[in-house]
Length: 207
Image 1 (cartoon, rainbow, N blue to C red):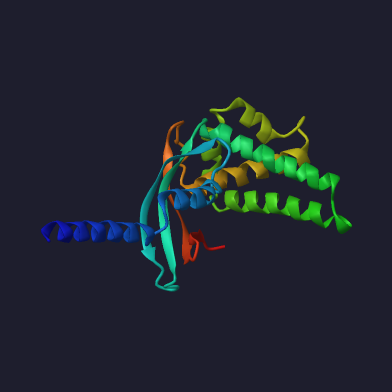
Image 2 (image 1 turned 180 degrees about the horizontal axis):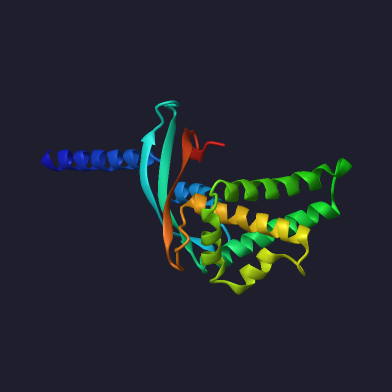
């Protein structure tokens, strides 16, 4: 009788354990779903490190959904000025492509040019006179950055776009949390999350 009781208790314990495990999205599912979300914030010259599940909870706004959150770091893999330069060069390639395919009445080209020049100029202007010293300190660490900043063969329009592109790129790293003194290996903490829903086939990401 006692043995039967023990068997019943053990069976119930195992069943309960399995049920609890299925009450939340698995580590593999949540990690695979949230990783691309986390990686979408990576910029040139950075990588994702220390990616791990932090917490999970029932969504109070949608009780049929379960939220899972991961923490991670965005870590520099190259000197900050060079990373900024790489992104700025990507912006210039987008500008060149828009000039080759300007779209109807050149709208595509104008929009791209405006996004680069307005974004970079506004970020610089907001800093006032203090930007010049900040610029010299950062660019002084990177000869190719200085060349890019000065434009092609001293062309005024080229310099305008390249400076705006570099400033816009710089602002993106600042927005992530990188200070001008950041070195290779330094990282900024981030969080990423996603909702999941229990279906008849198990847990699935909410599209």
